[in-house]
Length: 213
Length: 179
Image (cartoon, rainbow over all chains, first blue to last red; front, side, top):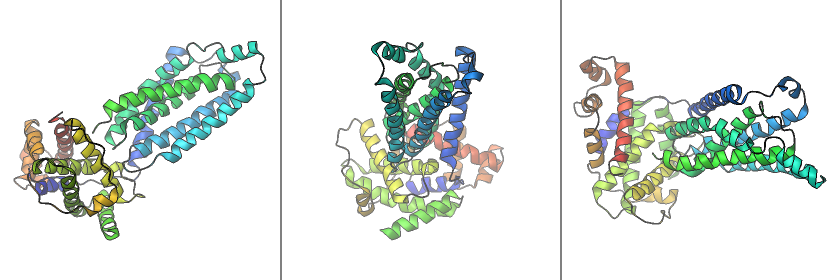
């Protein structure tokens, strides 16, 4: 086929594209992924029994704000990395700022503790399962986001995959907060953050293979 | 070169709003630029250059949603062209350093002659009969979508949807042709 013929074909397929198409598709993917995460937390892990009481306390919301802020940065980074020739630096800086702020709080909480209290803060009651649960709750959303990214045009597949995975991990961690009773900066700064990062790494590896176009 | 950017961008914006003639003009101008860019960076035959031009045109066409209207058009198109070039090298296991160029090289490459694309013809041949028939009706017989739809016994709208799907399949098959 000659190129002018191809161009005629493509012109016959001209369709209007909304300027908001990319963020809208990604937001829908996030909504679907968050729905699956919520279903997993309700059916599989089950919400914490004292949810109503916890929700009236401050740390429940601080924890949610941390992961939600990471999710916001993750959304922006994923959306940027789906576009060729666009930098995702501001979104990455936003994620780093959120991370730095929360980890500073964790260090301030950790520093004055006795050794026994430190161990208790690090282990909480669920340190053996926390990160793993977050990764599993986030996994369906990671896949959905990668499928949406595939239809955009990511020119850096691993970076875009990482952003999609970390975005999903942060959304998953926010939903996981409905189940998880932990309430210290130290625990959340350690295990929640690890869950989000591992989810990002899984996204990067999957992205390497899935985000070819 | 700023004129080139301004002209292409305005064509792209009209195309994204559904203006087929602006879209055709955009792809025509862009195909010349792509051919020049790829020719300069590939030592192999003309056919390969045209394959890459066509693959990139398909990507530009199918992935318009990834264009941010606040961004220069040429930066977007160049990033896609560069990605396609690197992907092409990777698929054919050609080991070269990533191109040390930027958007300026893309804009200033010397024009080259247009040829026939082989990958796309092969990919077209591998499509299911219905998709292939639709593409050939529109391309070779020069039918409009409503005429092509009538021949297949479907409405113009359905033919339009089918053509879009067929083009997406075609783009996918082109990449796999030599994977």
